[in-house]
Amino acid sequence: MSFAVIKTGGKQYKVKAGEILKIEKLDSLKPNSKIEFKEVLAYGDNKTAELGNPKVNGAKVEADLIKNGKNRTVLIFKKRRRKNSRRKNGHRQEFSLIRISKIFAKDGKVLSEAPKVSSPLKKKEVKTK
Image 1 (tube, helix red, strand yellow):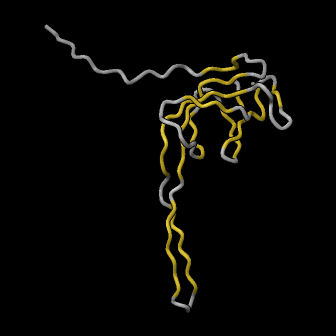
Image 2 (cartoon, rainbow, N blue to C red):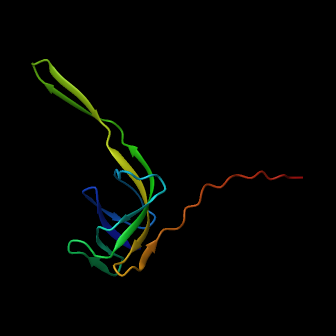
Image 3 (tube, one colour):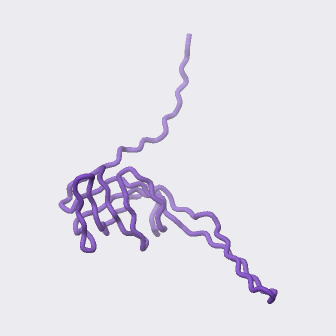
């Protein structure tokens, strides 16, 4: 099974084809749009690996944007004792949910590809006699 290490949103992720990731929000993108990550730090499989210095030129990872959303609220509560001073604040971090579809090597060859996702099947009524 081949993998790639990509960098996005100031973080590094080890990804495989078909994997679903929650990353920092990617602005100005609509759901079901294609994303290309050109900042690939390493890629390989069980036998060999290619490391970049700092990145592998020509390698890329393609992904599909599933949705943009917000995480649960994180409460920030600050209190100074004996001063009757307190402050309550909340924060909801935005994220993008992506699905890795293809991993390309530096020569443009496809290392791994995720199977196509079909829409849920509709149930058909079967008439019996």
